[in-house]
Amino acid sequence: MGLLVDGVWKDQWYDTESTGGRFVRKDSQFRNWITTDGAPGPSGEGGFKAEPGRYHLYVSLACPWASRTLMLRKLKGLEDMISISIVNPIMLENGWTFAPDQGVIPDPILDADFLHQVYTHADPNYTGRVTVPVLYDKEKDTIVNNESSEIMLMLNSAFDEIGATEGDYYPEELRDQIKEMDDFVYPNINNGVYKAGFATDQAVYEEEVGHVFDALEKLDGILADKKFLLGDKLTTSDIRLFPTLIRFEHVYYGHFKCNIKHLTDFENVWRYTREIYNIAGISDTVDFYHIQHHYYGSHPTINPNGIIPAGPAISLDI
Image 1 (cartoon, rainbow, N blue to C red):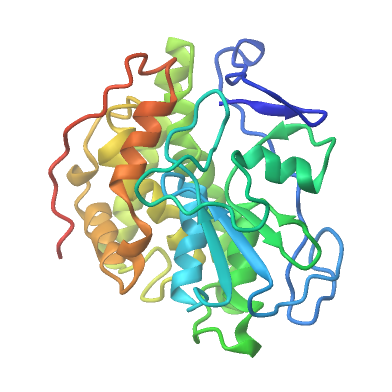
Image 2: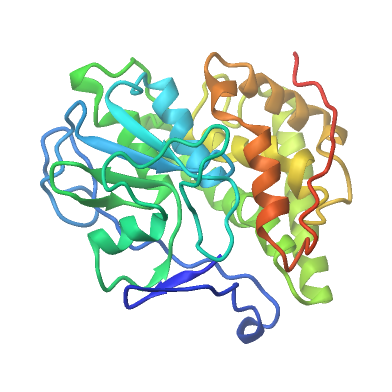
């Protein structure tokens, strides 16, 4: 766990003292967009045209933010167009690494030992956290984007004209509803479990964990008569929510103390989680070995002995 300061790696845990015990997530900094013709996207510079084999995705199988991009890559059939590297699940004094372990795919571009070397290759003076996912341009030899929600949208449509699998998970007619749902899910569930788990003040923890379960109750009601969040169609809102839900029983319930109820106690949310897991290809993006080893093995301030739980034993069948 650490960050870069003017291009120099520092082993440093999150500063919650200055925020009253609250975990505050920083914004991503690389914000260019891949587009069909290379024109500038909503932010950043242009020149990143969708081309097969040009781009590389650095991910962690443990990270929910990276997993949403893996889901889009799978659903859109982009495995042969966009190569990937998978980091080691344990993230300690050197941050994300490419140390050998099951499921790790080394860096074929820079032959980096640590992900922070990819960041400083793109920006020698970079200051900030070194996070996944990272979308990299092999042609320009630089990072395109490290904001998962934006990478999702690029994968959803930018490659459609050069052979991506048909399917629009961000349809124009649902975008207002998608934004409204995302604005609810992100602070209360996606980031909410982190705000509870990384809290260093009892009152802050109790407030944040309350928000998580209030939100789950609301979602359980929404899903009472819907297959997915916005109806019968899978959208990017579902793809943003699912990685948090699939990790809930394995890490957030115990490690992050989100334990007022089990996710399995929310009948409709649990059915929904299993429905998405069983969509063709989605289970390929879920690796419980990486998930449990990362969380329980990478946060010594929360789990100082690094013990990895034996359970839970739950069925994801439908």
